[in-house]
Image: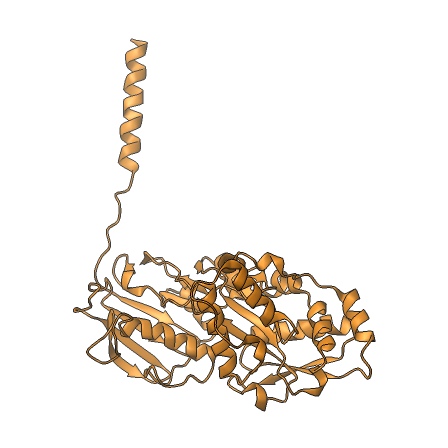
Length: 384
């Protein structure tokens, strides 16, 4: 009798557990994905130049949604998963699902992209369910998560770095550049300014891409920086420029100035226009952001060269191509070539961070150089 009772209880328990298992959710068609970004895109022409790196990155994402990457030429007949429905330059872009897309119709009916939204507004709108998908500044990621926002981050694939253009008397001496590099406390920048959303950068590529980033030092050495600086006479006064519209760059620039002063280096910071060429700037050094254009080291380093060239930064150490099937050793040697002489000083690697509403399904953070995979995203339930 006891055995039968035990078996009956076990059977009821199993049935009850099975009843509580939720069925797998199947993707649904329909709905409008509401997107908010910081950039203001003035033209959808792929050939039109971007005003700054922020707009260039946004244009790349939009291109991936409306142009077919596999097409031999871009035209209105060769569209991607979405087509343009409404366009208000710098303000609003509405895209409709392309029924004839060769990769299959997207699950979404439409994507609505609002531009020029501040970091604060994007986070508030996610909290209030006024948007479904929004960029979040890396330094705001932890705070957004604490406020109940679902946060998705890519691999660290955006580099914040110092560059020293040629022809600037205060920084033409390599010892000046080395002293500044050794004074920078990258760990403090990652832990306090970025709230640990990122990692210290020593190489021109992140560890996950090159496999050799750990060979490049990232720790501060104020003592050695002081020793180097003591050898320089007269001591120059250095101006570090940063993007006037980038609060993160400002915070990092100010921290670098504090680190430099602790080593006896006279360094002040100055806001400059984001699209101002290095040669035209009054700054002796400059903070820049560079998003990897590919997860592959060879293509990524080529993309870095293009970014620097667009800024008017020319230096023989970063010119020239690499073998198509470059070995790990060859990639490492090219990184060494780029970093020797301290013309380029990596500071931190940042992820691209996104906030998602509760109804967004099947989102995957894209690889470097790839667009947002919104054709694969679907929405749970009806739009609010």
